[in-house]
Image (spheres, rainbow over the protein chains, first blue to last red):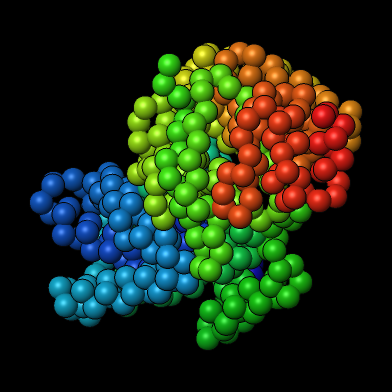
Length: 289
Length: 247
């Protein structure tokens, strides 16, 4: 029974990972940006909540209402300025710039908040769970996060495939020069994609901050798991990212069930195995021509 | 009437290679102009200068009385400059209809029903209506060329820059494309057409420019240009026979 529980916990963790990963996937899929600061953005979202929530009298549970819009606007501005300027040079510059952002973010947070862990305390809400048997425990909070991840990914998928703006995002992702030639201001569209990516990572950062402690140096671990989720699921597929997150989560929980020291290792092994067997990921699109 | 497009002393070099050395010419509203010249004469680069992909080293591009040097390709498209690429670049993962819809909504700044009407008309005029719901990535060469044309037409241009749309097609296919271009021109869209398939050009244009070594070495009625000694010098071989066939 504890094995079943491990799988269930893994699926729930997968929701977190998918939420982290979808912004990463979007930035790469649309602009070709590998955002090495992605994990740090989630941490910054946590700190923004820590700073702002006492001022706004918004209950901590609803802190995303405040933080997500800030991140969306910040994402648009950062894309139109620093990230676009680096994209105009070459992809390698972009990699260096996001790496630099990550270093700056970590050190600025250390300076401002010290290395002590913080968390977003939502009180007893975090402890509620549903226990169908004595060995299986479904945390309502984790279930909610998984639900949010499914809704966010589904909404994003629908937005991309059905809306006019989504169509423009697909067009610039495909060929930004050709898009420009038919009148598309691709820089603005890139900005919108960045706004969405930043909004989702803020959501992930806040959810994670409610669940576990975070510190200025928590970013890279977030980034690593998000990366693994994207690659396992297949770049360019949002539902793939969800499955990737779940596969990673389940692998880690099963590893932990064998021996607590194997938790992260098991995730890496599955990641490498997928890379070896299906380099394009489980749902990776075979690129035509 | 002021010319629709004017190039004024345009100069462009890539390293040691001169692509354009003091190129000047004007194109009237609704005109149909062909451009010929040997490979590497800088024809495509010249289109880049007009559409905004390529920044000239010197000189001005004037569209509809306005110097557009500083505008990016998207802004120039919205002003009415439509362009096709030599190798079609449709949005492969989108349907044919979506491809033209993006062009109609962004290039022509149309919304809702109007943009749909623009898109449908562009598909109809290029005979792509039956393929509207196919993925662009699944199209063959002829259809891809048509889509490239349809997308440019959907932006409701006043000037259409066509870069070798007839290359690689059979005679019959070329004739169909010529009809499409002539129909667009008949609606008042000025056309500048770079083409190696001289026959296709002669069926459409009433003025021919010959570019070589970064210079305009011939400009006038197609038969006069093709018959001029300077142009024939540049074109030893196959295209000289094409010139004879009209002379």
